[in-house]
Amino acid sequence: NAGVTQTPKFRVLKTGQSMTLLCAQDMNHEYMYWYRQDPGMGLRLIHYSVGEGTTAKGEVPDGYNVSRLKKQNFLLGLESAAPSQTSVYFCASSSGVGYTFGSGTRLTVV
Amino acid sequence: KQEVTQIPAALSVPEGENLVLNCSFTDSAIYNLQWFRQDPGKGLTSLLLIQSSQREQTSGRLNASLDKSSGRSTLYIAASQPGDSATYLCAVAGSNYKLTFGKGTLLTVNP
Image (tube, rainbow over all chains, first blue to last red):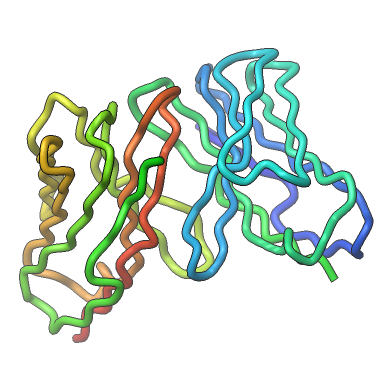
């Protein structure tokens, strides 16, 4: 009963470095989402997927790329990290009825 | 563009008090509305989900209502306890079930 698992939980990057955040769900959900949460800004949608092999831009997609090669996995990539990408990142999945969120990845870019 | 507003931004009450948290949204074309709880430094815990065709949902001491036509929802917490202290987030689902969140209400229940 893992639900949604995010790895890593914490990461510190230097400006310009790249990294990939992994989200894995075991509920066979079609829909998956990446959000970022910043103080005073709330949760904002970065990218989302409506099924295996699909991706689409959300509200704040610049500087991020995503892939959904397998239904259970949704990867979020930062090609060249910037201090403005310091945030807490949440992945979520949905069947279209309920939503399950991961526990988050706290990313700091110095 | 959907906008979700939560009032108040912060609320402090004594233990045992009944309280209401408010959520409003600008576009009534929603699939559902969900209330979440978030503890400091933690993830989101789903509390109640109301489908667009429903008017309310109840779980224990929590009751959420939805008036889609007026773009409003309320979360009622009965007999509040210190363990209810957290940030409460309202979110509405639009196309592709994408959630748009409010900025939350920080609730403190004092013993």
